[in-house]
Image 1 (cartoon, rainbow, N blue to C red):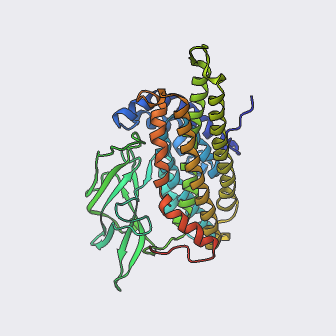
Image 2: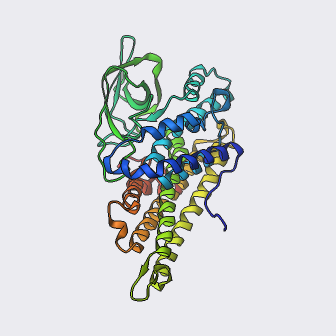
Image 3: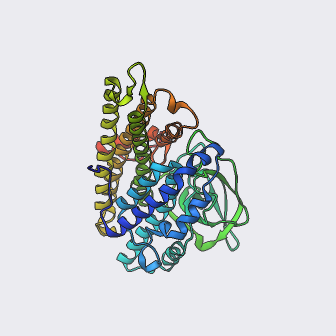
Length: 413
């Protein structure tokens, strides 16, 4: 039988996807338990560290698996998404940091700059350290962090309250977007690197959501949290969509999309098996033989084909721009163009994945509505897509339209 799912393109990517599939078979049975209890899958993360899966995107020179293709890492998260969407988005959080640091190192080396700190960071990631982006805050967006750093003796004081801290139960390193007040009263955007357990950092145990209940997306509070001076990096003006955020909005988002398509694929495979096995009176024939069921299944297949086609297409372009070309050859205009098409694909994929799971639930005839049924979990998990940053569905349309019309991509509402 033909396999129309997405597949990796490189040898290193194939090894990572094989590991992802092995881990998916192991975590599938525990996904419902973590969903019911809102608990984090510590055992699965330990297994992924032991197998080397979490270091897949780290270059081999730093002890990793050497997967440079963002597309291939996306396929790996896609396989995890079929089994457990919560775990897939948690793993993608770590992969996203690895992706960003690798690109920074490539750029530094192309310029001929010393990059000792980046090399040390990748060495830590290659040795098994887990990293997360601790970016989201209530009442603002990723371009305007309200978490603030203030210069103090010996370094910087970090103060703020972050939400949706996916992977927080196990992350060793938090990448914390923050603002810094300049002498002229304006603000700069930057990134604070905070190691787990730094005094003044409090990781709450408060994640309790409709879906993605096993992702460990707790709040993290920073109060008089002092970090060394070299652990804060000023990057741009407050509110500016700089190169780093564009990389996250394209490359890091690709893995998220892979996870949500994985959820849709899991729902599709489950409902096919259910419809082929279940029968209905008075004929006693399988549900799959009913014309109405066949029509609904065709609609589901149309949406899933849309998912796979869009994901393959945008994944190819992300690799072409962010991986195949030298970092310094890619202009900001090109990054905005890539971001715009990536955000457009993100909107299409989010809608289509939701529709696939919704159709599967409808075809289940009510069985999927029961809490014990995996369709119930997939139905809730897939709805996390539209508010995933950057950009949320509420913000993406304006950005896509402005780029298409040649206007300033960033306009404050």
